[in-house]
Image 1 (tube, rainbow, N blue to C red):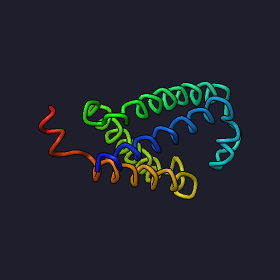
Image 2 (image 1 turned 30 degrees about the horizontal axis):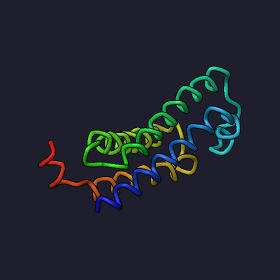
Image 3 (image 1 turned 135 degrees about the horizontal axis):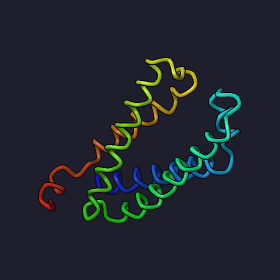
Image 4 (image 1 turned 90 degrees about the vertical axis):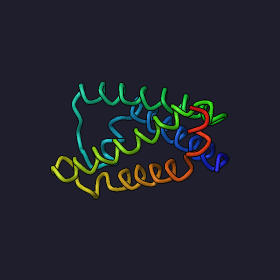
Length: 130
C-alpha cells in the first residue's frame, strides 16, 4: 500500500507541476482548451498565481512521497486538496459557471485521486506515528 501511495503522490505532483507551468506560460491556450474563449489580463495574472501554487505543491508532494508516513501531513494535504477541488468544481457546474463538458474531466480526475489517496492512506501506521 505504501508503494501505491508513493506512486500516486508522484503522479499527482507531476500533473500539478505540468498544470501549473501551463497556467504560468500558456494561460490563453489553457482557456481555449476549456472553451473559455478570450481572457482578461487580470485572469492571466491569477492563472499565473494559481500556477505557481500548483508547481510549489507538486514539488513538495513529490518530495514527501519518499516517506509518506514521516510526511503524513502532506498526504492529508493532498486528500484535502483533491476533495475541495472536486467539491468546488461540482459547485461551479451546478451554479452554471462552467459546464460539465468544459471541466468534467478535471472533476473526474479529482475524484479518482481523492479515492486513491483515501484507499492507499496508511490508516494503521499513521495512527501509530501520530
